[in-house]
Length: 460
Image 1 (cartoon, rainbow, N blue to C red):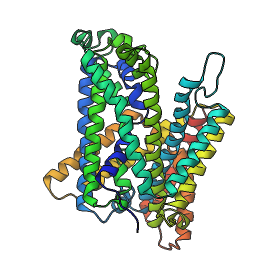
Image 2: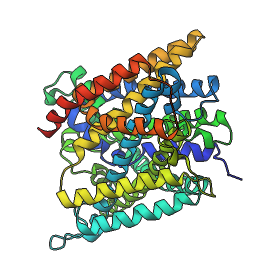
Image 3: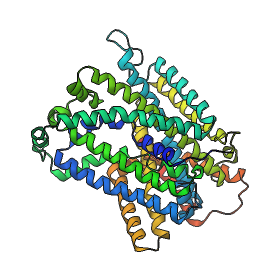
Image 4: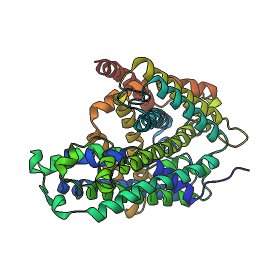
Protein backbone atom coordinates (compact mmCIF):
# COMPACT_ATOMS: atom_id res chain seq x y z
CA UNK A 1 0.00 0.00 0.00
CA UNK A 2 1.33 3.45 -0.99
CA UNK A 3 2.16 5.84 1.83
CA UNK A 4 0.56 9.24 1.36
CA UNK A 5 2.07 12.69 1.90
CA UNK A 6 1.02 14.62 5.01
CA UNK A 7 0.83 18.37 5.58
CA UNK A 8 4.47 18.75 6.69
CA UNK A 9 5.84 16.79 3.68
CA UNK A 10 3.68 18.78 1.25
CA UNK A 11 4.66 22.12 2.83
CA UNK A 12 8.36 21.17 2.69
CA UNK A 13 8.02 20.18 -0.98
CA UNK A 14 6.60 23.61 -1.89
CA UNK A 15 8.96 25.60 0.33
CA UNK A 16 12.04 23.69 -0.83
CA UNK A 17 11.17 24.15 -4.51
CA UNK A 18 10.89 27.94 -3.99
CA UNK A 19 13.91 28.41 -1.68
CA UNK A 20 16.73 27.34 -3.98
CA UNK A 21 19.84 29.27 -4.97
CA UNK A 22 18.15 32.62 -5.61
CA UNK A 23 17.67 33.62 -1.97
CA UNK A 24 21.46 33.65 -1.38
CA UNK A 25 21.97 36.23 -4.17
CA UNK A 26 18.80 38.21 -3.45
CA UNK A 27 20.43 41.03 -1.39
CA UNK A 28 22.77 42.10 -4.24
CA UNK A 29 20.22 41.45 -7.00
CA UNK A 30 17.68 43.73 -5.34
CA UNK A 31 20.14 46.42 -4.19
CA UNK A 32 21.43 46.74 -7.76
CA UNK A 33 18.06 47.82 -9.17
CA UNK A 34 16.03 49.34 -6.34
CA UNK A 35 16.03 51.58 -3.27
CA UNK A 36 14.50 50.59 0.09
CA UNK A 37 11.28 52.47 -0.79
CA UNK A 38 10.93 50.62 -4.12
CA UNK A 39 11.68 47.28 -2.45
CA UNK A 40 8.90 47.76 0.10
CA UNK A 41 6.41 48.61 -2.68
CA UNK A 42 7.67 45.78 -4.90
CA UNK A 43 7.42 43.12 -2.21
CA UNK A 44 3.93 44.37 -1.28
CA UNK A 45 2.73 43.92 -4.88
CA UNK A 46 4.43 40.52 -5.18
CA UNK A 47 3.14 39.40 -1.77
CA UNK A 48 -0.47 40.27 -2.62
CA UNK A 49 -0.18 38.66 -6.07
CA UNK A 50 1.40 35.40 -4.93
CA UNK A 51 -1.05 35.08 -2.03
CA UNK A 52 -3.96 35.51 -4.50
CA UNK A 53 -2.47 32.73 -6.63
CA UNK A 54 -2.02 30.52 -3.54
CA UNK A 55 -5.63 31.24 -2.46
CA UNK A 56 -6.82 30.39 -6.00
CA UNK A 57 -5.12 26.98 -5.72
CA UNK A 58 -6.56 26.47 -2.24
CA UNK A 59 -10.10 27.27 -3.46
CA UNK A 60 -9.75 24.95 -6.48
CA UNK A 61 -8.66 22.05 -4.26
CA UNK A 62 -11.94 22.57 -2.34
CA UNK A 63 -14.23 23.17 -5.35
CA UNK A 64 -12.77 20.41 -7.53
CA UNK A 65 -11.01 17.82 -5.30
CA UNK A 66 -11.51 15.31 -8.14
CA UNK A 67 -8.92 17.14 -10.26
CA UNK A 68 -5.84 15.65 -8.61
CA UNK A 69 -3.47 16.35 -11.52
CA UNK A 70 -2.89 19.92 -10.37
CA UNK A 71 -2.28 22.76 -12.79
CA UNK A 72 -2.31 20.37 -15.77
CA UNK A 73 -5.83 19.10 -15.06
CA UNK A 74 -7.08 22.64 -14.34
CA UNK A 75 -5.90 23.73 -17.80
CA UNK A 76 -7.29 20.60 -19.47
CA UNK A 77 -10.67 20.69 -17.72
CA UNK A 78 -11.14 24.39 -18.34
CA UNK A 79 -9.74 24.91 -21.83
CA UNK A 80 -9.51 21.58 -23.66
CA UNK A 81 -7.07 18.77 -24.40
CA UNK A 82 -4.51 20.77 -26.37
CA UNK A 83 -4.23 23.59 -23.82
CA UNK A 84 -3.93 20.96 -21.10
CA UNK A 85 -1.15 19.22 -23.00
CA UNK A 86 0.72 22.49 -23.63
CA UNK A 87 0.47 23.29 -19.92
CA UNK A 88 1.94 19.88 -18.98
CA UNK A 89 4.61 19.99 -21.73
CA UNK A 90 5.74 23.52 -20.84
CA UNK A 91 5.83 22.74 -17.13
CA UNK A 92 7.81 19.54 -17.65
CA UNK A 93 10.37 21.23 -19.93
CA UNK A 94 10.81 24.05 -17.42
CA UNK A 95 11.37 21.50 -14.64
CA UNK A 96 13.98 19.59 -16.69
CA UNK A 97 15.98 22.73 -17.52
CA UNK A 98 15.65 24.00 -13.93
CA UNK A 99 17.08 20.67 -12.70
CA UNK A 100 20.05 21.08 -15.03
CA UNK A 101 20.70 24.53 -13.56
CA UNK A 102 20.50 23.20 -9.98
CA UNK A 103 23.07 20.49 -10.71
CA UNK A 104 25.42 23.07 -12.27
CA UNK A 105 24.97 25.42 -9.29
CA UNK A 106 25.74 22.65 -6.75
CA UNK A 107 29.18 22.01 -8.26
CA UNK A 108 29.82 25.69 -8.87
CA UNK A 109 29.24 26.20 -5.11
CA UNK A 110 31.51 23.24 -4.28
CA UNK A 111 34.33 25.03 -6.11
CA UNK A 112 34.42 27.39 -3.11
CA UNK A 113 35.92 24.52 -1.07
CA UNK A 114 38.05 22.86 -3.78
CA UNK A 115 39.32 25.43 -6.29
CA UNK A 116 42.41 27.59 -5.90
CA UNK A 117 44.04 30.14 -8.25
CA UNK A 118 46.23 27.32 -9.59
CA UNK A 119 43.57 24.56 -9.60
CA UNK A 120 40.23 24.80 -11.44
CA UNK A 121 38.41 21.62 -10.43
CA UNK A 122 34.68 22.45 -10.50
CA UNK A 123 34.89 26.03 -11.84
CA UNK A 124 31.48 27.39 -12.82
CA UNK A 125 29.93 23.93 -12.74
CA UNK A 126 30.71 23.17 -16.40
CA UNK A 127 34.10 21.40 -16.18
CA UNK A 128 34.27 17.67 -16.95
CA UNK A 129 34.74 16.98 -13.23
CA UNK A 130 31.54 18.94 -12.48
CA UNK A 131 29.60 17.07 -15.17
CA UNK A 132 30.77 13.69 -13.78
CA UNK A 133 29.79 14.78 -10.24
CA UNK A 134 26.45 16.19 -11.41
CA UNK A 135 25.70 12.96 -13.31
CA UNK A 136 26.46 10.90 -10.19
CA UNK A 137 24.13 13.08 -8.10
CA UNK A 138 21.45 12.87 -10.82
CA UNK A 139 21.34 9.06 -10.72
CA UNK A 140 21.60 8.86 -6.90
CA UNK A 141 18.47 11.02 -6.64
CA UNK A 142 16.91 8.92 -9.43
CA UNK A 143 17.39 5.78 -7.32
CA UNK A 144 16.02 7.59 -4.29
CA UNK A 145 12.77 8.61 -6.02
CA UNK A 146 12.38 5.08 -7.45
CA UNK A 147 12.16 3.88 -3.85
CA UNK A 148 8.95 5.86 -3.55
CA UNK A 149 7.86 9.49 -3.54
CA UNK A 150 7.14 9.27 0.21
CA UNK A 151 10.76 8.27 0.94
CA UNK A 152 12.11 11.11 -1.21
CA UNK A 153 9.66 13.58 0.37
CA UNK A 154 10.79 12.57 3.89
CA UNK A 155 14.43 13.27 2.97
CA UNK A 156 13.31 16.55 1.38
CA UNK A 157 11.65 17.55 4.68
CA UNK A 158 14.98 17.08 6.48
CA UNK A 159 16.82 19.03 3.75
CA UNK A 160 14.29 21.88 4.02
CA UNK A 161 14.81 22.14 7.77
CA UNK A 162 18.59 22.05 7.23
CA UNK A 163 18.53 24.88 4.67
CA UNK A 164 16.50 27.07 7.05
CA UNK A 165 19.33 26.95 9.64
CA UNK A 166 21.84 29.20 7.78
CA UNK A 167 19.01 31.43 6.55
CA UNK A 168 17.66 31.77 10.10
CA UNK A 169 21.16 32.48 11.44
CA UNK A 170 21.66 35.21 8.83
CA UNK A 171 18.30 36.83 9.66
CA UNK A 172 19.02 36.84 13.42
CA UNK A 173 22.54 38.28 13.01
CA UNK A 174 21.38 40.87 10.44
CA UNK A 175 18.55 41.96 12.74
CA UNK A 176 21.01 42.41 15.64
CA UNK A 177 23.41 44.41 13.44
CA UNK A 178 20.67 46.43 11.69
CA UNK A 179 21.48 50.14 11.39
CA UNK A 180 18.52 52.38 10.53
CA UNK A 181 20.74 55.17 9.19
CA UNK A 182 22.31 52.81 6.64
CA UNK A 183 18.85 51.52 5.68
CA UNK A 184 17.39 55.02 5.26
CA UNK A 185 20.40 56.37 3.31
CA UNK A 186 19.12 57.42 -0.15
CA UNK A 187 15.73 55.89 0.73
CA UNK A 188 14.14 56.63 -2.67
CA UNK A 189 17.20 55.79 -4.78
CA UNK A 190 18.27 59.16 -6.19
CA UNK A 191 21.72 57.67 -6.88
CA UNK A 192 20.11 55.15 -9.23
CA UNK A 193 18.80 57.95 -11.44
CA UNK A 194 15.59 55.99 -12.03
CA UNK A 195 12.06 56.90 -10.80
CA UNK A 196 10.70 54.82 -7.91
CA UNK A 197 8.01 53.15 -10.06
CA UNK A 198 10.62 52.13 -12.65
CA UNK A 199 12.66 50.65 -9.79
CA UNK A 200 9.54 48.75 -8.66
CA UNK A 201 9.12 47.25 -12.14
CA UNK A 202 12.79 46.21 -12.10
CA UNK A 203 12.26 44.36 -8.80
CA UNK A 204 9.38 42.46 -10.42
CA UNK A 205 11.83 40.90 -12.89
CA UNK A 206 13.55 39.32 -9.86
CA UNK A 207 10.62 38.59 -7.54
CA UNK A 208 8.59 36.79 -10.20
CA UNK A 209 11.17 33.97 -10.36
CA UNK A 210 11.69 33.37 -6.63
CA UNK A 211 8.17 31.99 -6.16
CA UNK A 212 8.29 29.48 -9.01
CA UNK A 213 7.49 26.17 -7.31
CA UNK A 214 4.40 27.52 -5.52
CA UNK A 215 2.36 24.82 -7.30
CA UNK A 216 4.40 21.92 -5.83
CA UNK A 217 1.68 20.51 -3.55
CA UNK A 218 -0.94 20.85 -6.28
CA UNK A 219 1.23 18.87 -8.73
CA UNK A 220 1.48 15.90 -6.32
CA UNK A 221 -2.06 16.29 -4.92
CA UNK A 222 -2.94 12.73 -6.02
CA UNK A 223 -0.44 11.50 -3.39
CA UNK A 224 -1.79 13.68 -0.55
CA UNK A 225 -3.12 11.96 2.56
CA UNK A 226 -5.83 14.64 2.82
CA UNK A 227 -6.78 16.73 -0.21
CA UNK A 228 -7.49 19.72 2.03
CA UNK A 229 -3.81 19.69 3.07
CA UNK A 230 -2.81 20.63 -0.50
CA UNK A 231 -4.21 24.16 -0.25
CA UNK A 232 -3.01 24.58 3.34
CA UNK A 233 0.53 23.49 2.42
CA UNK A 234 0.62 25.93 -0.50
CA UNK A 235 -0.49 28.84 1.67
CA UNK A 236 1.85 27.99 4.57
CA UNK A 237 4.86 27.65 2.24
CA UNK A 238 4.11 30.94 0.46
CA UNK A 239 3.82 32.81 3.77
CA UNK A 240 7.09 31.25 5.00
CA UNK A 241 8.98 32.03 1.77
CA UNK A 242 7.60 35.58 1.61
CA UNK A 243 8.73 36.20 5.20
CA UNK A 244 12.25 34.87 4.47
CA UNK A 245 12.58 36.93 1.26
CA UNK A 246 11.35 40.13 2.95
CA UNK A 247 13.65 39.81 5.95
CA UNK A 248 16.72 38.81 3.89
CA UNK A 249 16.25 41.71 1.46
CA UNK A 250 15.36 44.52 3.85
CA UNK A 251 17.68 43.59 6.75
CA UNK A 252 20.65 43.41 4.34
CA UNK A 253 20.21 47.11 3.57
CA UNK A 254 20.68 47.85 7.25
CA UNK A 255 23.97 45.92 7.40
CA UNK A 256 25.75 47.68 4.52
CA UNK A 257 24.58 50.69 2.44
CA UNK A 258 22.70 49.95 -0.80
CA UNK A 259 25.50 51.22 -3.08
CA UNK A 260 28.05 48.93 -1.40
CA UNK A 261 25.66 45.96 -1.38
CA UNK A 262 24.98 46.43 -5.11
CA UNK A 263 28.69 45.89 -5.85
CA UNK A 264 29.02 42.65 -3.84
CA UNK A 265 29.95 39.38 -5.53
CA UNK A 266 27.27 36.68 -5.52
CA UNK A 267 26.17 34.82 -3.50
CA UNK A 268 26.07 38.18 -1.73
CA UNK A 269 24.76 36.66 1.50
CA UNK A 270 28.24 35.15 1.96
CA UNK A 271 29.84 38.62 1.87
CA UNK A 272 27.29 39.92 4.34
CA UNK A 273 27.94 37.00 6.68
CA UNK A 274 31.66 37.86 6.67
CA UNK A 275 30.62 41.33 7.90
CA UNK A 276 28.46 39.73 10.59
CA UNK A 277 30.60 36.82 11.88
CA UNK A 278 34.03 36.93 10.23
CA UNK A 279 35.61 34.60 7.65
CA UNK A 280 33.54 31.59 8.79
CA UNK A 281 30.48 33.39 7.45
CA UNK A 282 31.43 32.46 3.88
CA UNK A 283 31.75 28.79 4.81
CA UNK A 284 28.32 28.75 6.52
CA UNK A 285 26.60 30.31 3.49
CA UNK A 286 28.46 28.18 0.91
CA UNK A 287 27.43 25.02 2.82
CA UNK A 288 23.88 26.37 3.18
CA UNK A 289 23.74 27.08 -0.55
CA UNK A 290 24.75 23.50 -1.41
CA UNK A 291 22.16 21.99 0.97
CA UNK A 292 19.50 24.42 -0.26
CA UNK A 293 20.08 23.68 -3.94
CA UNK A 294 20.20 19.90 -3.34
CA UNK A 295 16.85 20.15 -1.52
CA UNK A 296 15.34 22.24 -4.32
CA UNK A 297 16.69 19.75 -6.88
CA UNK A 298 15.05 16.84 -5.05
CA UNK A 299 11.71 18.71 -4.92
CA UNK A 300 11.85 19.55 -8.62
CA UNK A 301 12.78 15.97 -9.53
CA UNK A 302 9.65 14.73 -7.75
CA UNK A 303 7.49 17.35 -9.50
CA UNK A 304 9.12 16.88 -12.92
CA UNK A 305 8.55 13.11 -12.82
CA UNK A 306 4.95 13.50 -11.65
CA UNK A 307 3.80 15.61 -14.63
CA UNK A 308 4.31 13.09 -17.51
CA UNK A 309 2.74 10.40 -15.28
CA UNK A 310 -0.36 12.53 -14.68
CA UNK A 311 -0.52 13.63 -18.31
CA UNK A 312 -0.24 10.00 -19.52
CA UNK A 313 -2.92 8.92 -17.04
CA UNK A 314 -5.22 11.56 -18.55
CA UNK A 315 -4.20 10.47 -22.10
CA UNK A 316 -2.25 13.64 -22.95
CA UNK A 317 1.24 12.01 -22.94
CA UNK A 318 2.12 8.64 -24.52
CA UNK A 319 0.68 5.65 -22.67
CA UNK A 320 4.08 4.24 -21.58
CA UNK A 321 4.66 7.13 -19.15
CA UNK A 322 1.71 6.07 -16.98
CA UNK A 323 3.74 3.13 -15.62
CA UNK A 324 4.62 2.98 -11.92
CA UNK A 325 6.91 0.53 -10.16
CA UNK A 326 6.15 -1.63 -7.11
CA UNK A 327 6.82 1.40 -4.84
CA UNK A 328 4.22 3.46 -6.76
CA UNK A 329 7.03 5.70 -8.06
CA UNK A 330 6.54 7.18 -11.55
CA UNK A 331 9.33 5.00 -13.01
CA UNK A 332 8.84 5.53 -16.78
CA UNK A 333 8.30 9.26 -16.32
CA UNK A 334 11.36 9.51 -14.07
CA UNK A 335 13.56 7.77 -16.65
CA UNK A 336 12.34 10.18 -19.34
CA UNK A 337 13.05 13.19 -17.13
CA UNK A 338 16.50 12.17 -15.95
CA UNK A 339 17.74 10.95 -19.35
CA UNK A 340 16.72 14.40 -20.67
CA UNK A 341 18.66 16.08 -17.84
CA UNK A 342 21.71 13.89 -18.54
CA UNK A 343 21.67 14.81 -22.24
CA UNK A 344 21.52 18.52 -21.32
CA UNK A 345 24.49 18.15 -18.93
CA UNK A 346 26.61 16.51 -21.65
CA UNK A 347 25.63 19.24 -24.15
CA UNK A 348 26.66 21.96 -21.66
CA UNK A 349 30.09 20.34 -21.32
CA UNK A 350 30.54 19.76 -25.07
CA UNK A 351 29.45 23.21 -26.17
CA UNK A 352 30.54 25.23 -23.12
CA UNK A 353 27.44 27.29 -23.94
CA UNK A 354 25.50 29.66 -21.72
CA UNK A 355 22.08 28.10 -21.19
CA UNK A 356 20.67 31.06 -19.21
CA UNK A 357 18.59 32.23 -22.20
CA UNK A 358 17.06 28.76 -22.50
CA UNK A 359 16.36 28.75 -18.75
CA UNK A 360 14.59 32.12 -19.01
CA UNK A 361 12.49 30.97 -21.96
CA UNK A 362 11.57 27.71 -20.22
CA UNK A 363 10.66 29.60 -17.04
CA UNK A 364 8.27 31.70 -19.15
CA UNK A 365 6.45 28.46 -20.01
CA UNK A 366 5.54 27.96 -16.37
CA UNK A 367 3.92 31.39 -16.12
CA UNK A 368 1.16 30.54 -18.61
CA UNK A 369 -0.11 27.61 -16.46
CA UNK A 370 -0.14 30.03 -13.48
CA UNK A 371 -2.43 32.37 -15.42
CA UNK A 372 -4.66 29.41 -16.39
CA UNK A 373 -5.14 28.55 -12.68
CA UNK A 374 -6.79 31.93 -12.13
CA UNK A 375 -8.69 31.71 -15.43
CA UNK A 376 -10.11 28.26 -14.55
CA UNK A 377 -11.23 29.47 -11.12
CA UNK A 378 -12.89 32.48 -12.79
CA UNK A 379 -14.72 30.07 -15.11
CA UNK A 380 -16.19 27.89 -12.34
CA UNK A 381 -16.45 30.33 -9.39
CA UNK A 382 -19.94 31.26 -8.22
CA UNK A 383 -19.30 33.10 -4.96
CA UNK A 384 -18.25 36.79 -5.18
CA UNK A 385 -15.19 36.16 -2.96
CA UNK A 386 -14.00 33.31 -5.18
CA UNK A 387 -14.55 35.45 -8.28
CA UNK A 388 -12.54 38.32 -6.73
CA UNK A 389 -9.64 35.95 -5.93
CA UNK A 390 -9.82 34.55 -9.49
CA UNK A 391 -9.71 38.03 -11.07
CA UNK A 392 -6.77 38.99 -8.83
CA UNK A 393 -4.88 35.77 -9.69
CA UNK A 394 -5.54 36.33 -13.43
CA UNK A 395 -4.26 39.90 -13.26
CA UNK A 396 -1.14 38.78 -11.39
CA UNK A 397 -0.57 36.02 -13.95
CA UNK A 398 -0.83 38.51 -16.82
CA UNK A 399 1.50 40.90 -14.97
CA UNK A 400 4.12 38.13 -14.59
CA UNK A 401 4.00 37.36 -18.32
CA UNK A 402 4.31 41.06 -19.17
CA UNK A 403 7.09 41.76 -16.64
CA UNK A 404 9.18 38.79 -17.79
CA UNK A 405 9.01 40.01 -21.39
CA UNK A 406 6.56 39.17 -24.21
CA UNK A 407 9.58 38.39 -26.44
CA UNK A 408 10.43 35.38 -24.25
CA UNK A 409 6.83 34.19 -24.61
CA UNK A 410 7.26 34.26 -28.40
CA UNK A 411 10.59 32.44 -28.16
CA UNK A 412 8.96 29.74 -25.99
CA UNK A 413 7.04 28.66 -29.12
CA UNK A 414 10.32 27.03 -30.26
CA UNK A 415 9.94 24.63 -27.30
CA UNK A 416 6.16 24.19 -27.67
CA UNK A 417 6.29 23.24 -31.37
CA UNK A 418 8.13 19.86 -30.93
CA UNK A 419 5.58 19.01 -28.23
CA UNK A 420 2.85 18.92 -30.88
CA UNK A 421 4.45 15.73 -32.28
CA UNK A 422 4.29 14.19 -28.78
CA UNK A 423 0.62 15.27 -28.50
CA UNK A 424 -0.31 13.65 -31.82
CA UNK A 425 1.64 10.46 -30.98
CA UNK A 426 0.00 10.31 -27.52
CA UNK A 427 -3.46 10.36 -29.12
CA UNK A 428 -2.45 7.36 -31.24
CA UNK A 429 -1.08 5.35 -28.28
CA UNK A 430 -4.32 5.90 -26.38
CA UNK A 431 -6.34 5.15 -29.54
CA UNK A 432 -8.05 8.54 -29.40
CA UNK A 433 -10.18 8.86 -32.52
CA UNK A 434 -12.17 11.95 -31.51
CA UNK A 435 -11.47 14.88 -33.81
CA UNK A 436 -9.80 17.99 -32.46
CA UNK A 437 -12.00 21.05 -32.04
CA UNK A 438 -11.71 23.94 -34.48
CA UNK A 439 -9.99 26.23 -31.95
CA UNK A 440 -7.47 23.46 -31.16
CA UNK A 441 -6.63 23.06 -34.85
CA UNK A 442 -6.30 26.86 -35.10
CA UNK A 443 -3.93 26.89 -32.09
CA UNK A 444 -1.74 24.18 -33.66
CA UNK A 445 -1.57 26.28 -36.83
CA UNK A 446 -0.63 29.43 -34.89
CA UNK A 447 2.11 27.59 -32.96
CA UNK A 448 3.62 26.12 -36.13
CA UNK A 449 3.56 29.46 -37.97
CA UNK A 450 4.96 31.36 -34.95
CA UNK A 451 7.76 28.78 -34.57
CA UNK A 452 9.40 30.06 -37.79
CA UNK A 453 10.12 33.67 -36.71
CA UNK A 454 10.71 32.50 -33.13
CA UNK A 455 13.44 30.07 -34.28
CA UNK A 456 15.02 32.82 -36.38
CA UNK A 457 15.04 35.23 -33.40
CA UNK A 458 16.52 32.56 -31.09
CA UNK A 459 19.31 31.74 -33.55
CA UNK A 460 20.13 35.43 -33.84
